[in-house]
Image (cartoon, rainbow, N blue to C red; front, side, top):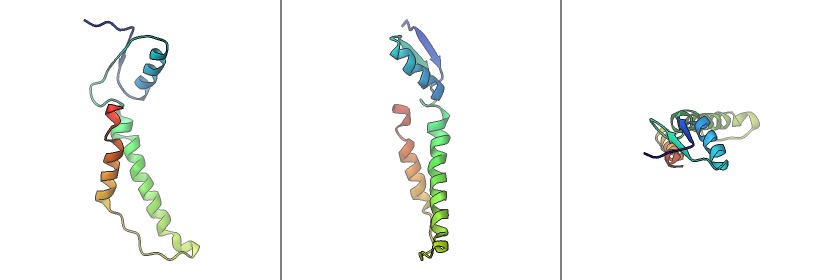
Length: 96
């Protein structure tokens, strides 16, 4: 049986923050996470959502280019490529 100074339940943002402080204090730490390290935000929530929202904002800006006398072809979204980009950005999150 291994012994630790601190056991953290959950590997989300809060758990990760506590890990940094406790390790900096020289304490041994065990983290218990039932699913993906990092929690919901980087794996399934905030980070993937931000990739999709950024694409929507860019598409909207391009669509309004005519307001500034900029002539462009109508923008098109490559949904498959966007989802591949989203997946690539978060692919290594649990291993960080």
